[in-house]
Image (cartoon, rainbow, N blue to C red; front, top):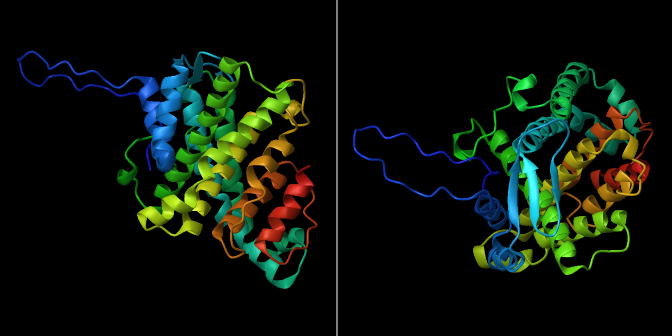
Length: 327
């Protein structure tokens, strides 16, 4: 799994000899490598599209708000937005330990989900800690730069060194954040293509959904041949890609201002975007995708104070009902 974009640095010379001048990869090349690593079975295709459209990748100075957009000639983001993906993604991973016990009780016994949440005596402190991490991540949106916020001590700072992370939990979170970021960048690249080709849908909300759908399809079509060629289990490859896209959905939800959640002239209702990104995966009922997705959706519903009087007999059914409730 290729790491999120970072700014390469050349170390200073350690002797009096003249330093060797080496060209650091450009931001455009770094982003291309991320996308090729995230979707290796389509690496040649994305490289060809990269050459065809000739757009630039602009890393802007960090500022308040979120910077990630595109036009016919460039994809633009700032490092603070990349940090937001990292911090919220690693924080969101903790939703599984917070809500999976109640989810198990509800789906096993047929108890309404809200009752299962309330009888989980250990949930209180876990949920409080989880919400504190989410608050830290969301505070990054309003900050001028990452250094202005409190960074939770148990969440690693952004790094390209996946193998240097302390445990498998963090490595999994790293992979899912990288997939989420790849999805967002593919979404922006589709805007580049629409603008350059003058072929965009008639309204901006339609274009947003179309970009989401294209990015999802780009990351998930053709997986069977890739898995077979490399000796991977197809369901496991699809599961991990799909989970990364769910993380992208949660991060996009957090990036969207509350006043725009119901849609406006620029964006469709956020529930429509989440549904387009999350629903429709043909994964087995026992796949971890359904458990992880259900926990993340429960977390969103709890953050918004939405009712959880839901009865479901499986994690998959729970996801379907939660998505319906979000609309």
